[in-house]
Picture 1 (tube, helix red, strand yellow):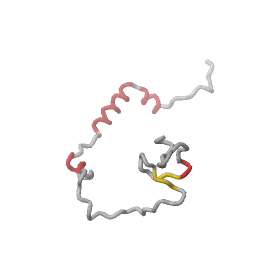
Picture 2 (cartoon, rainbow, N blue to C red):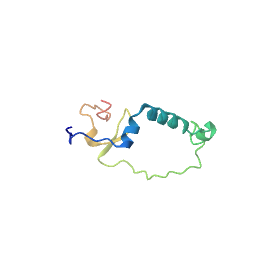
Picture 3 (cartoon, rainbow, N blue to C red):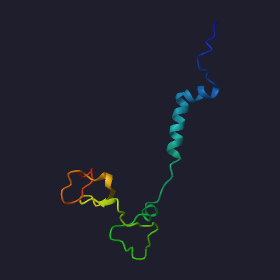
Picture 4 (tube, one colour):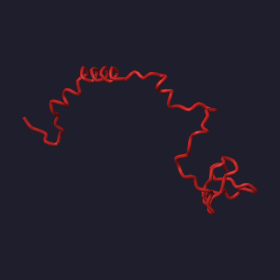
Length: 98
């Protein structure tokens, strides 16, 4: 009998993984490993609109607008001058908003 040496060989582990019973068992195992999360514990991490943030401090350094930047009059984002739209008129508008 001729042997094809170019064909990929399957090991015993590969043969077990291909069986339908093995795949079904994996699907059952994945669904059973889900962790029940308490909704109140999960909701504690979210801030509600209008929450009192007067005691909070910024943890990032805020830089003023640089000479080569502008503030878009539509989206109010600070962008580099290369993003300035050519037909902006009187107010500066970025290319995304134009």
